[in-house]
Image (cartoon, rainbow, N blue to C red; front, side, top):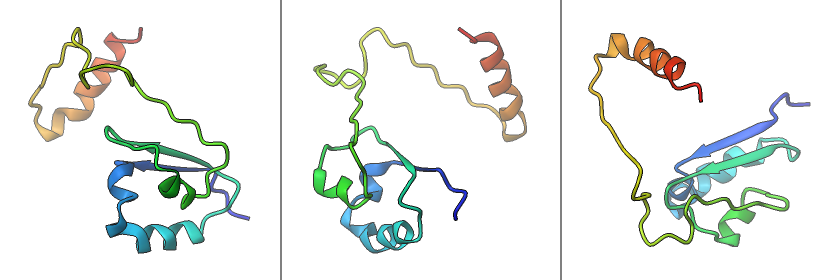
Length: 101
């Protein structure tokens, strides 16, 4: 029995694209049927055909601001920080510690 419990696919819209159909099917054929599958994508569709390939049972579709006119909330403040590679982990840890709420 496989110890695998969760399959996580980021950029699921690209992975579910027909260009990766053979590779995805090959991977899924080796996975246990009893698992949780999580799909993440900024542009994920509700395509039942695509989702059925992943052997999903009772899938839930969650979307942030699904009814919004814009994809980014108008009050969202976005900041970019350029951090040297050797300092990224420390910067991330510092950010998490100061934003626990």
